[in-house]
Image (cartoon, rainbow, N blue to C red; front, side, top):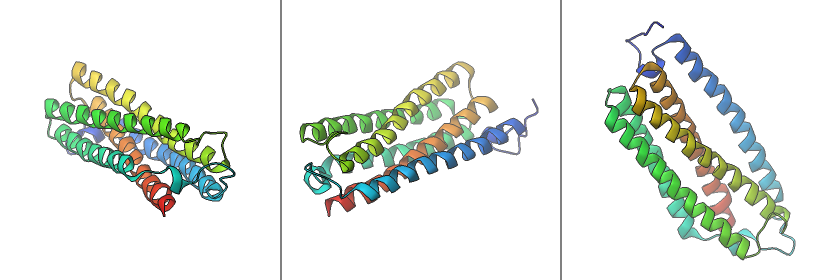
Length: 198
């Protein structure tokens, strides 16, 4: 495996470049998935039936905390990738751990939010609005959960093998995934929560 030292480590081999390109293609499919969910949500957001509407169940405080946790995690993973490019394994791992802990905190608040919604009578069966709300938020939450397991597996590989072109490639691809989840959340925050509170 020939390594090109003029490129960042994650792009160091031809295969690494192909892996990153392939992941961008995968993210395009993920964009279509979330675009479909958003379209369905916007089509059904006023079909509340006898159930609650967004203005009745959305609370700004937990949503702000979730947003701060996720946006901060996007910053820390960026610092982790920067440390990785400098060859600072310990710093890279530290920033990745912080990122995953912030993601775990986000997930904790989201689970609590789901429990509150169910307590308030907003379930998958309540109305078209609540069904699409739970589906959209749940899909994003499942992606975050998957990311926590994936990030942990990458940390274990970096700890065992060090910073190699292969582990750097995996770490960088994971960072793209994590940034994507943050971008999706910004849309959720802006067009579901803020719009729903008005």
